[in-house]
Length: 529
Image (cartoon, rainbow, N blue to C red; front, side, top):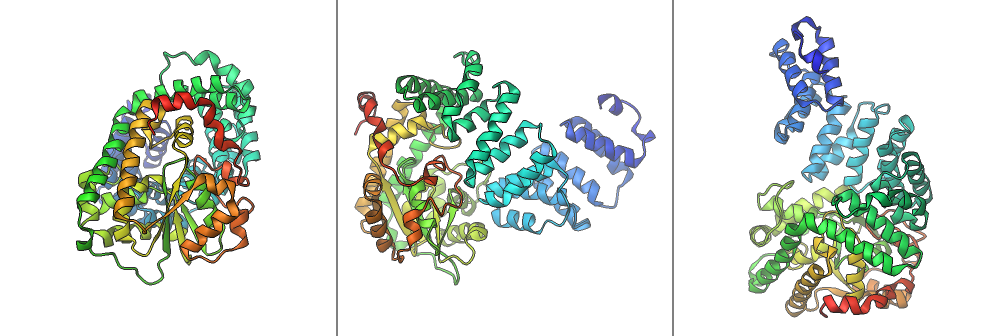
């Protein structure tokens, strides 16, 4: 490639230049792409042809000029509506900026044939996953894997999607094949397998032990340590597991200390803001015709939020939108911030939700419309939305709010064992987790004091001990008529893309709720009740 760029490009035909550009693109050679694009534009100074615009979009995307990339891909589609590559690239960018309504339309209306392109099949599948549609994504990942079965990433993509839709056995088989082929050298595949069938990880963990040296402080190490910890948990070797969970957490903590502090500060700032606000002066957002009534499931992660969501979504009148980040992104949107890069702060929260509850509501509902079409109720179970509760009351005065509660040490232990990908960075060390839980408790005390009677509290221990009674009581408070499906939610499982997805595909069991007690002394030494 570099040799080709080193020659006089004027000697090549335009068709040859286009082929060379695509080769450079496949190899990720941005410098070559830019050089070739200059020559392409020199030859075509006027006409915004679909191919040229597509090339411009690719270069802009890789340079981080996303607005230019979006404009170029849109021009490409205007020139040729069957440009599936431009449509999918554009949809991917729309997902990146949490413009889900537009992304869904692009994927849904895509007219071009990309059935023989593993790259675009994968990109389309990734968009559909982001949009909360793993069932729609599955055929794309299947096709990509079938076209190139030796590409491990395609196999792992398919395995993830299969696990989301309840086909864990197929996912396990795929991951075992990847790890056998690679000799156990794929940390992410090993981690995926440990979430589905930890007992099957042993031969691959043994192959990986030599790479578990403390000096290798990277994400792959954390994933490998987590997988071995889960294996030891499955074997009943809890002490070994505890040590490995600690080591994995130390790796992640080293990289995410700033994020952990930000999360705690946001909890404290949101609490102060809510307590200092005269809520009667802020008008409620208005409900438009045909909007679903929202049910927000809130609380700490690992406290039963996914279980409650799955129970509710088994009801024929309820659709789940999953665990989105759309509330936070809608807050950023109405505050005029960058949806892809900015974070919600106390200042942003004040600007957005105190002045624009209608805008927050409108933006959120527009971007979940494809998930809750014709639904009477839509349930969202993003635990971190708990921090936004008072502000959600103004944006969704017609909504119902459920707070799940679980024994704090059980919650702490479960959070400590879970390697969260993009949130709850404080959970990786008990000392940091204690700070977070204290801030969360103060926040919840404030919500109870100021907003008594405006939400439902559901105790996880009660739910697993007497599920039929607890579920019936919850539905009564929600003013939703009971239905047999909710008492057999695991039979009517649709999909879940959360850390608890495997547990909620089973009937409700209380046996695992006491696992934390064997480490009670260690937990109480760090976690202050």
